[in-house]
Length: 599
Image 1 (tube, rainbow, N blue to C red):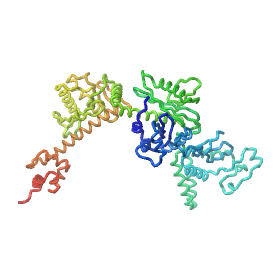
Image 2 (cartoon, helix red, strand yellow):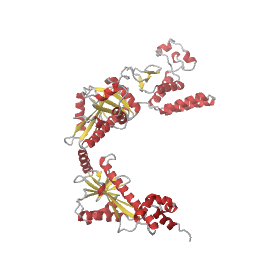
Image 3 (cartoon, rainbow, N blue to C red):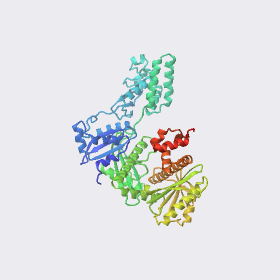
């Protein structure tokens, strides 16, 4: 598939946090970077001349831009680190070393030690992180030390060593930082209870531990040690704000491939994430053009086989959104919650963003194809006999029965056709009767189109529920148009779509393009009708007061209301203020009318 132009790729990037990757004409990776806003960050490379020659050379070589969307800026920072270390891009220098972000380790041993480390050793120990903020790590370790006196020595505290009296307590015991497990002064059960509480803190589940924090803080306060109490309070606040885990790296998840699929009428988009040693090291999205009415299951199975062969993937477990049969040698996992579900959600999110970008590019490059796709989708979603190329939407406007008006807006090929919009003054209805008003307006609109031999719409949308729809149907039946034009009503509260003769409404997906077009029509009809109604009401209010002023015509009255907004303000205005709007001679007539001088 031919790659879209670079400016088009930039134009359709999302405004989300993520990591971007630059590739040259040969598909070789040049650079990996992170961004709080992908679109702004990537655009900044191409809209200025850079200070360094290296960056200018890099920009000239860029042909393709790929990206991975992640939930937070912290995740982007971690993912950038992983990808740079895995892919070793030529223009990345700072993170190509073998250093990684720090972890907090709970060592697998009797009387477990808890410490900071950059190296993960697969000996059954637990690792939490990684942490991008060293201050956060030290705050957590300090807080743990304040709350739970654990050992810091590296002795082998086996039961036999303790019983034989091999070790002696050190200074940490004497100053109260350790309870002396090396001499058997603290039982293993009590020590491990503290380790379990620390484990929950590191997981982010520290509601129970907060009681201990507050108890310690209150103890300091009661002993008038206010500085120590304030320090504990500050550490609690930091701890409450910290993010315990990252979706990007989890040491418990190793060597797994993640696949997800998002599809529409014409294509499917399959996203793939490769997890190696707990880190995302590759992301790729494949778009598949649909030839027949293939199911998502069939398409995803084909895509998995192709991607595993293309990238030479050998993992024994894959994560997917639904059950698939991929043979006995591959374990298929469909996670419902937990860390694996988070990574699957991340994959689905990237597939959705990729689809949105492709549709945006299609809309720019080939607008006709974009319109055809939307029209075909609307025909299917709304169960119409033909594509709704010409849609008309009606809305009534009246406030307590005054100045009843209606509006008709017209969309052609999914876009507003403003030259075809029409306003209606309700003529035959007395009082606030929306149903009778709708019957009159629909009849007048299509009687005129028939008389003038103008083309009729394929779809009529009535802003309202069953009552409004039934009122409009009376006119449609009277004109003999039942069956020739599709008509539906949309209720405001739950966005329900009502069809003639069907008491059960249709509910569309809140994110579907069909519902968005219908909502746009309804909102446009409402805006157009309300504007006309306000103008008419205001004009009537002003006319009732100023139409009898000698020498002041309708055009002048319209100018006055647009400027002064009300009769009261007009009466209070000075002659100079009025003159600045309509001239000196007319201003004098208005002032003389409202403020006649005494003879």
